[in-house]
Amino acid sequence: MRDAAIYLESIGISSIDINMGCPVRKVCKVGDG
Image 1 (spheres, rainbow, N blue to C red):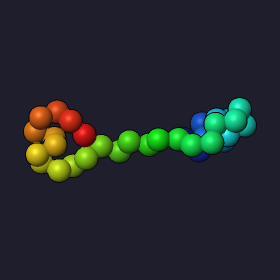
Image 2 (image 1 turned 45 degrees about the vertical axis):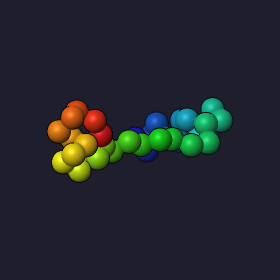
Image 3 (image 1 turned 30 degrees about the vertical axis):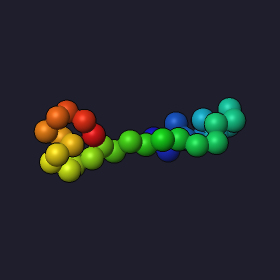
């Protein structure tokens, strides 16, 4: 992930969205998160 972030920064990307999911039961039980 570090190497990818360095590469993306080098080509002008200024932010990365890292979605780690949501462990809340009401979210997980419907396949979201």
